Image (cartoon, rainbow, N blue to C red; front, side, top):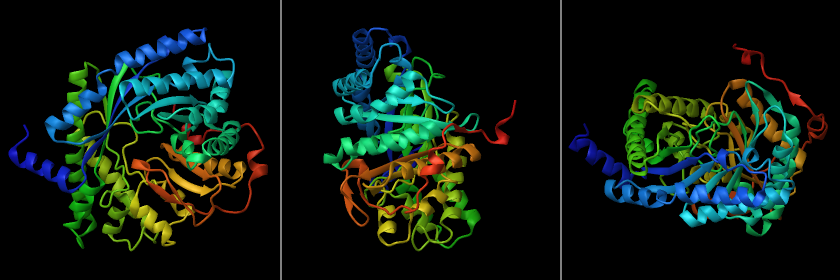
Length: 454
């Protein structure tokens, strides 16, 4: 039973500390929309999405108004389109037609984004997988709300280096195709290792084949709440610090659980998971970097940063799993550069480099996220960065991802504006030495020895 003290405490977190439910994401299986005829396939996809999601936005707005908890985004994730469109699509343009159908459906129901223009190729690519991947630049340049992801590795299968090489080229092509908008297409494209089937956060959300026909997944966020809580224990021991973060994560997750169950009940759709990730925004006071500084760092990137982030991530998860029986998705601390004012400040101060960010991804959720790099960066270097991050995920049995934005026409020291929750980013330098010979070897990196657990 929720008492009056908890109600007052939640209201304070919402009003003063930037607590929100970042997204209600409706997962929709499109496996039954597969058809050998492209027109019929697109028609089935549009009809199923618009029928299933017709009340999603209104429900989210009603819950936000009635409970007094901001629900920032209403989104949709669908079955990886490489699986759905494989029988109908004979060309990149055919797959792009499906992307346009997804975009029309997203506009029709009013959601912010629709994820699932995706392929999972951790061991190899089918014809449909490769066609979809090659169509990504065209698809993202023709659509507004479609998000794309490609899973190129896993702990069980290793890393498909042919797909990694291809994705370096695709990131570059997507940047070029959307260069008039700051290469924003790359902000809607994620490369994964160990991608989860139930992630509600964009741009990596897709509805996994292990999921049911429909499901509600909710992503909560509360960096400001955590920062405010640990301000009160400044100078205390690590034991006190950890307990404070854990208790705060519990409270934040309970809010997400409440919203998720209510959305599930009103929509008549099964509740899936609560993703308790600390997802920052460009708003002042809503920053993971500021939490790390409050823990004791002069600036993110300073010695001790990785240890502080590991502590934060672990305590958030420990608190969250006590608050909900169904914690999933990514669940941890996001460290995107463009979406976190504290991260931007650290880059501008010279405290935070790409290499330090890579080290930090060993202990937190996701990976190298929303990082702007020079537009003339070679595709092979982008592939090398992807390969490094995939290796971290594969060996450490965790989800890692790369969302790099080579901003065409911009170099180190320039800034690119994306707007909204995507924020803005300083263009960061990358290592000037090449890895073309490594990336061009072909084949796949085998799974690590500890993957054999049968």
